[in-house]
View (cartoon, rainbow, N blue to C red):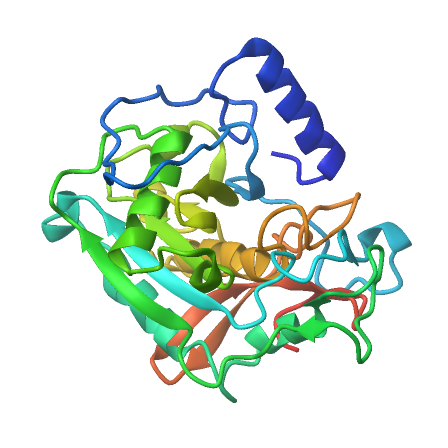
Length: 328
């Protein structure tokens, strides 16, 4: 999916006229399913045509060495809201959806993602420091936080606040976008985040099991996307993260060494950064040319070594550097 806001608005309007649950790209989508794993007290709504931060399987973006670009590449703050534009203290909840995880994680995704987030903090994580130049609570249209607003903080300890293997039932073969949003609400309930306050910084990463097709993956053309949904527990930020290794080594990354986990790491760092900087899209930092912080830089990957291992991080747009970078 093109990452510009004008294209996303066009897709949303078209989907509304057609009254279908379109995926985030105008490709073939998976069928809606009735088997959503629901929680008795959770009510969610999600328009399947409304997703943001879509990382396409066939990436695009600005090259990492380009400086002096047009003003259209600069990210700007879309609202002056003091809540929901960014996530000042990022908190991640990993949800491994479905009983399939017990016997069908041949690539080792569950351990890998936990390791990545357990190491994504402190002095070793120079990639995450890119995010700290962005903030909320200043004038809409701003491109520089200066000393104002509430800035994103670089975590001093792991941002991973919880892990849930939701294994009471299998994940549906082809869960619709609304089912994924419902699973995010189930996760909020599971972790006890049942009021808006804890959800002002929580992002729920719904990791689908191998062999499943969340929101039409991979035929819908995306590696992943993030969004917000309304629930009984307030507005929730969540990510639809398919089992990227099902597409083989080299998918969703520019690294070419054949490492099977690079694609899902690159994809999740893309979505994590975009959720942190555009928490309830599109209230946060984006632009009219190339979308959000990760959309601009899909052609740039690098390996970062943390205390827990070495991981593929996708490049991010830095206003201060006027470029795509992999460290801040």
